[in-house]
Amino acid sequence: MIKPNPTQNEKTLKSDDFIVSKTDTHGKIIYGNKMFIKISGYEEKELLDAPHSLLRHPDMPKVIFDLLWQRLKNKQEIFAYVKNLCKDGSFYWVFANVTTTLSENGSIRDFHSVRRKPSLKAMSVIPDLYRQLLSSEKSGGLEASKVLLQKNLDEKGVDYDSFILSLQQ
Image: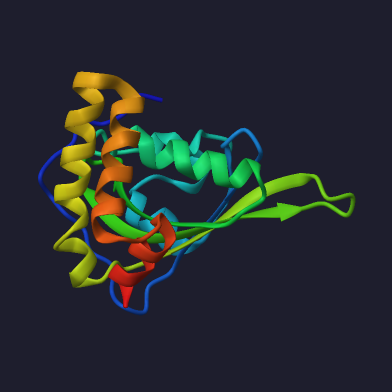
């Protein structure tokens, strides 16, 4: 499937909207609720078995997904702000909580993501931070972006989780 060209058209969630999706251990979509399907602009049949990265907006720094996959592989949840790309090129921001679903023997069965509208406070901080991280990635690679993210956290005297959650309050 060909990814659309991003536009400047932003879609926004209402405060009571929840986007839910599940992916298998390879990142392929195995479930999406009606809101997920509606905001993405894809038909359900186009989404099912497609890689979730289909929705990845090019403005998203890789360091955020690197952290996400690192946490999930360790069976830890993660909260993150994500800019997603719609089928028509529009975009939307979400505050995501991603967790692993474990099988009876403790192995990872799939990943479950619940997303909602990000706070105004987060949207006054995150887009600029992500621009900086992306710029750092383009000039120095993923490692440079990791260093910059850690520097930002150190300057604030917080860890990643505390920083992200503080923006949603």
